[in-house]
Each structure stands twice: as structure tokens, then as C-alpha cells.
Image 1 (tube, helix red, strand yellow):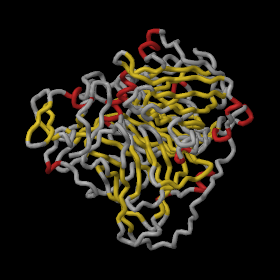
Image 2 (cartoon, one colour):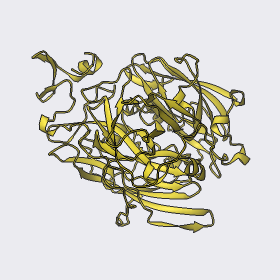
Image 3 (tube, helix red, strand yellow):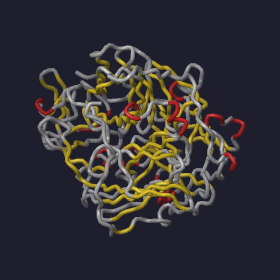
Image 4 (cartoon, one colour):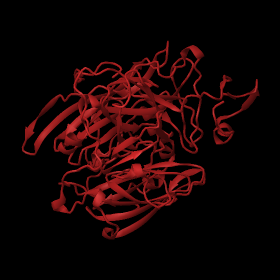
Length: 559
């Protein structure tokens, strides 16, 4: 039986019954299913690891592009709608996705090219996972966007409405992702399928890291299913939810054909509660070349690395040393307080195939040149060059369980709402530098803590031997893994870019069940009323026809 304590998950789940030496759960409807599986699938419908071919999400093409007085721009269209997916054998699953697919299409943009992404909510009036109206809010996670385009939790787009989000794309190259952020429903909406990657490219990452076929997005998530193939969501009160099936780009435990070359993988944990610890079955090193904010100044070779929900890591894997036909697993060693099942220790499999092209002469770098810092003339400092003595304020943020509610400094988003969205934890000026101590006092829980707008440098962890960041955290971060009783010290600058005088931004746990339950507060940069995130550019009734979707040519299935 998979390792799992008879603890909070079981007690909150409901009645337990023992039989045949195994542990079984009795649902509210009387169904009984094995405890080493959250899914209710029959054995014939349960996916088998490494039998399904890997696939890449399609790359979305713009509907319009050009150059105006402000420079280059591109315009995109996305529709949030229900779609059908063949995820488990013999059954069809309804997903709620961008353009009706999960993951949604990847958007790839060059630094300095502004984008407008018009997102139409064509979903049903009721989300079957919670019975509430299927309103949405889209957050481009990792972007220094204006507050009204940042995915503010109460800036809701209702079914039949649309909103055009405007993204500046001035930051250094990085892996971002866009996902739902609707207050109270974020977990269900993301879990249903509203998640996708967004790649911001620049000349420096292009020159130093693998590109094209060898630059591969990995959207890693977990899920559970009901017997009919529909998505199952049984959260433990407001503790969280972890499925028994691991997916990569919407495929359960895929197998990928790789050539004897160096590959760059953009790894996103698009989970709502689960965290991962990745390692190769061969024991060979994984090279960390990027974090949330893009390339790392130093490349770290690690045997494993930890990733919480919403974190992004860019890694290199060198397949040149393996013979054709060699199979290598990407494993999940897991972390404390995950709920693990029979096959959640597996992620995906690589199989080395012959390459008819010339030998790969790429040299894995030891250092990387991140290029010039945008808006240095305004006082912006590259995140990895920030120094503690530059900070003018130090703040302490406690994430904890209080009176059966998840809180930050004892406060919740309900407190923000009652203040008519005026209540803030701090009010730095644009380009101020601060230190935030992120303190997990919730005992037996871990949290992925996200701060909107900023890039930060981790300058301290109370649980490492030297009190510093883990080797894989050697670059800019916007999500911080707070393990049990961990404190992370983050050094950040509130860089707003050109013409962005700030406004209100959220900070919250990215265990999305915790966020919904109400572990989110806000801060403001500059004036609180500048760029009001709810009133400045609200969603409006959709009046434009849905355009044909155009995707870039894709690579063959399995590669």
C-alpha cells in the first residue's frame, strides 16, 4: 500500500472501513474505493505509466502584429471553454481550458514586444466541481503587469464576458504561466484545466540555452477521476487535494523520444496542492539554468531538486552519454506531507533514439550572462545583484492556521474585502528595496508562497546547513517553498517599469485550496488608487465573433 498516514485526509474525508487487510474509503454516496487511489476508475481505465506518448502544448499564433509609435506589438485571442480530452483509457473527460484544451496553448513573445490577449469566458454558468457560476480571472504569473491586468482576484469575467489583458514584456527572458485566479474558485478552475505556459524570450537566453526542438515545456500536475472519467475533486475541508495520477502536458506518465543531445526543459508545477522532488533514475545530474525570473547567474548541477506549486525551473538534461534505446525515468522522490500513491513516484520516461543530424557540440555552461537590466536608468537593479544593505524596510509575513482559517499575519482576503480593498500589509514606493521574512508557523504543512509583481533573491533559509538558499534556488524567485517550520528571507525590489506607477498587488499561498480558504492579502506600490484593479478596465460583454485558432507547426508526437 502506498505510504500515507491515517491522518487529516482520512478524518476529514469521512467514514473509514477496514476490509481484506486494506484501507478503504466510503464516500457520501456509499461508493467504496481503495485508499491507494483517489480515483474511482476501474483497473481497465487506469492509465499505465510510460504507455502514452509525450506531446507538447500547441504554440498560439497572434491574430495581429505590427509596430506602432510605442514599438512592436502582438494581439492574441483565447476562449475559455469546455472541451473533451482522452486522458484515461476508454473514457472521455470534460476539461475547462483555454481554447478548450489542457494545458492551454503556449504563448511565445520576444522581450520588448507588447501583447494584448483578449480572453473570452465561454464557459457554462455552473462549474460542476463546486456548483457556482464559472467566473474567471486570468493572471500572467511572473509578469510585472499593471494591477488592472494582473489577474486581481475580484476582477471577475463572467460567462458571456471578455477582457483584454495588456502585458508589457519588458523583463528578461523567463518562463511565465497564465492561469485562473478567481476568488474562491482558483483551485477548482485551475484543476479543471485553466493553465498554460507563456515564454518571454530575449537574445541572451537564445544565445546560451537550447532552442527550438530542444526547448521543451513540461506542465506537471496531478489529478483524480471518477469512475465515468470525469474529474474528481474531494478536498480535505480546506487542507488541500492531491490526485493519484501524475500528468505531464495533460498526458499521464508519458514517454518521450529524445535524441542524444542536451535538452532544456521548462518545468512548471501546475498543481493545486502537491509538491515534487525530481531526480533521474540514472543518478546523473540535472543542471539548473533558470528559476522563476529567468536564467541563473551560476549553473547548479544537482542530483534532485524540490518544486512547489507554481514554481518554474529551467533545467538541462544531457542525453549524449546514453546508448540508443536507453530508457531514463524522471522520478518524483516526494516531500514531507505530500499524499503519495502507488505511481506518484513516477513522472515521465525518456527513451534515447537515433539522431541523423550532426553530433551535438553544445557545452553545458557554468555561468550565464543575463544581459542588461531593463530600466536601470530609473533605478532598477538586477535581482541577483541586490544587497541587503539596499533595503529600507524589513517585513515579517507569518503564514499560519488560525481559528480554522488559513491566514497571512492573522489576516485574510475577507479582511481586504471588508476594507473595500484598501487594507494593505505595506506600501513601498516604485523601485524601493525591501526584505521580507516569510515564516511558516503552520507546523505539519508546507506552502508555496507567491508575491505578485516582484522578483526576489532568497538570502536566507533557516533549515539549510549554511542558512542560505538551496543550490537550485540561485536565481530570481516569485514563489517560495515554505516547508514545515521553515523561514525564507527574500530580498526584493518593486520594479514597475516605464509608465507603471504601481497600485495594489496580491500575495498568497499557491496551495490553491489554501488561497481559496482565504490565505491571501495585498500590498500596494505607490498610490493605492492608481491603476485600480477592479474599475480601471473591467470585463465587458463579448461582442466579437470567435476567430479561427491558428497554431504554429508542432513537433511529431512523442518528441
